[in-house]
Image (cartoon, rainbow, N blue to C red; front, side, top):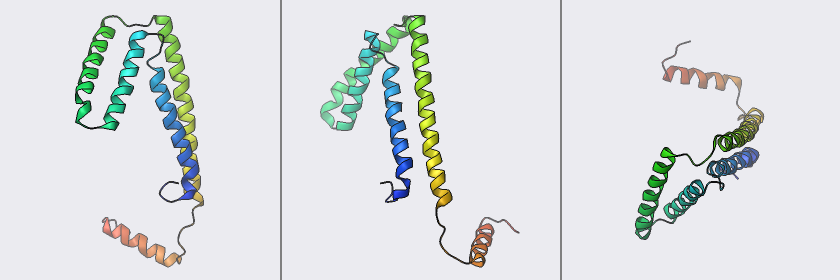
Length: 144
């Protein structure tokens, strides 16, 4: 439940699904078909796990990972490890994933909008609402 508000559950579930797909897309961007890119992905995942674990005992390993990632970046800059055809397929896969993520995020935003449209506003007379709006306009220096 988000912020103790059950009405936001649908939107929250959709945003969590989108987050999972973003993570999957990041993994897809470094495919197993290239040993160098696969190693980079594994190192990035390990670096993240070490960061989450924290502590001073992981500093040396994180430094070693950083150095290896720099070496991989340098190697990839000289000779990219995928052919043009492999890059084309990879970009197509990534494009499909972005489209799927976009759809899920639109659904989440729509669920949130539906929730805010159907939300009941506190009961108050129209005059109280008008007074509140006039007060806020005055605070911001807007005259009516």
